[in-house]
Image (cartoon, one colour):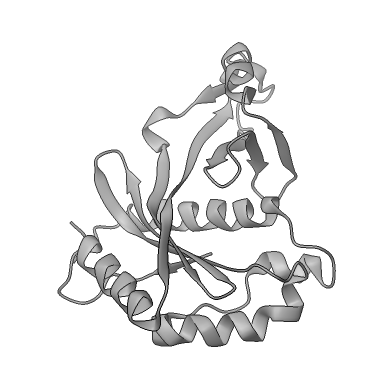
Length: 207
């Protein structure tokens, strides 16, 4: 999962169209749509003992690829995979965790299949405005991430050029173990946080 910068002089939507056009020229076929969303919860003030103590953030995420699951992640911490009713539990826990509603962020777009690759190109939005572009690439036959990274990289360069990413940090902890949906969600969490931080500074070209 990576962020693609907005092309110079173009809008977010125009850059997404350029990427999807390149995929279609390669021979990729549309396979429906996808959505990944993320809500931020922070530790309720009443639960913190010391005044100077900083609250923990928890990210509650959903992915249309896994419609029966809900993911709860802490930064640099564990990832809990629960069923879809986890959201209703969070309402009951509002004395401990409070929803930072203004921070809801999501990536929504089109899924493409190209041979054994699944590609999702999404527009990242916060509220009504587009904030950036996400690209997720999966090589479906392989479950050991390090075994197919070079192949993934070569494929990403074919339509992303020099914007193809480096090795995701989550790979560093996996080594030769099996890649799981939680690893994808960690990458989306990192991407969303990066985009949130970028929005604290006005960015030209995004509208």
